[in-house]
Length: 329
Image 1 (cartoon, rainbow, N blue to C red):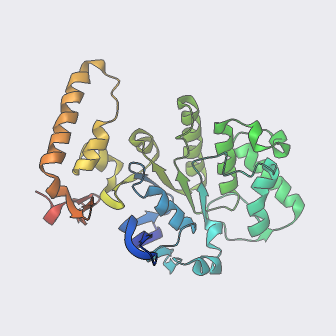
Image 2: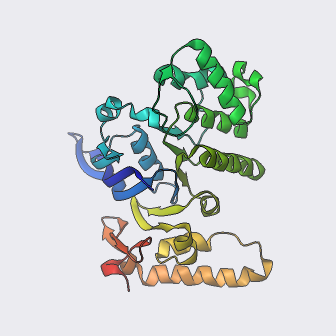
Image 3: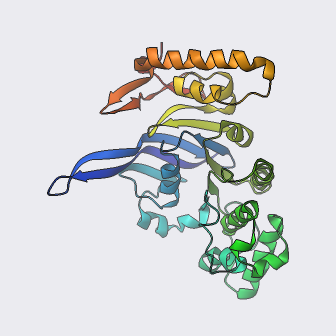
């Protein structure tokens, strides 16, 4: 697999100001020295509790947040700053599907106008597929044709083109968001909790549909979620995030079958079990994990002011990295 995106030592800090002169007295470290790689055609999961910095990484990738320091490289070319992104039409290749489908769609525009917007900015490619580099057309007839084609791909009828966002369910709006993201033939789609606001039955439909899109068009996905079950189904590789830091990084098998960091174990122990006979054993295991977290916290975290800061990642196997003091215990 070829490397598509590399993030090196990414930091996103938000200053805290106080005092009469409104000086910076502290920083909220939303993302604190994070590095990872996304390979072409692969799906990556980013998991953590609310406020752990997952969405901030996604927004930094698409250019909605300016990093405090660090580098973002796309196919070896630096795109950390907005002017660097504009120089290579970076946003044509990296798109985002937002968590709140309703607020991400302009209520004053029809669905046809919403999907056509990126096509009018970057042109209509001759075919749909990741990273198409051929000629693009700006003719209105081509734009209209492609909008109908995209609606067909996401399973919506042609009449959708003249309707408005409020006329659709949450699952349908999320499909429209995916169609808009697909319009430019992106190499990478950042999906920020795309199913968290949907019913379980609708979640399954959207997840299956997104998996089909990834398989058919060889698009890389960064799938951001707090639901480990969803991430296990969708992704090849998973990064676990806590307090702005990666605490564990590996393949799906590494994380679910050989979790080493206490925070990962806490997340896994919180997954409900359908086996009623294992209810008591599950409860005992959760208590054991909580006791380990309390008694051996120094093994996994160092104190950073009032919050816990995970240690640097240490390589355990070829694909598995864990944040442990001095490489583990």
